[in-house]
Length: 144
Image (cartoon, rainbow, N blue to C red):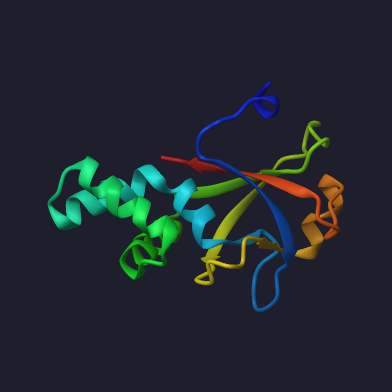
């Protein structure tokens, strides 16, 4: 039921190989995806930092989804570094026991043109994934 409905704080995207010094459970998210997954936290932090209403913070947030905003990027990056933030991932149609994987957001891409999430090669086998353009589902989990 969860995967056949539209749900908040989720995103569906194509994956690419994760290169560099990362752990097997790391994911690097695109800028706009990170903003969407962390939206309530970013808006709350913007409101507090700038001493503005949530409505005004939401307007700043919306502009940041259209044009790169370094302050919003910095806030999103601080949020992703929290131990409480985890990313759940799955690839349809592998909705079986054990087919969801919990990942750590190891980074956020600052290139708005790159719309892919980068994951380690070794997480592909359990969910039947590959880099042929199949889409993965990503959900934010706030383990407070």
